[in-house]
View 1 (cartoon, rainbow, N blue to C red):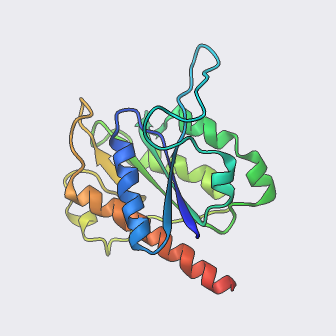
View 2: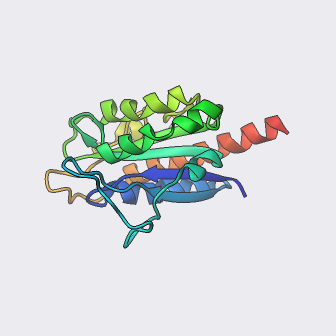
Length: 199
């Protein structure tokens, strides 16, 4: 069965929770959702991790990316950019770029920040750049999603976002949840439409 890969890094849990809402949307769109995360990195030594994390989604490998029908990438904001663990993982996808394995597949992005103006849109764009280099069809959220016009928390046309607050303790709002679900459903429906056209 075709699946949408939801690849994320989450430090305090909010981005991980968003990933699960994106997965709900994927499944509402008729495809399987595959949740995968990436291990942390160290600035002072080679970081080593077990092959399977103690909790949460398994770590991603290149096969998860190669075989997906579409991709959603999520990361918390780090100074208006994706977190280092996600960047490190994406930097290791050169073999997929060389083979064109991701070219023509739909993709979207999502993020969480501690402040409303903490670089949400810049972070989303930073995650789009490697996806564009892979030839993916990057998708945002259209303003037909009424929550984009009314949210007082997260939510952008570049992709879903969440305002976590200075202590990273604010719950994901109903608007933010619906936007995550909308992205997942949009990716699944687009991947299915592309598959039908190629048959």
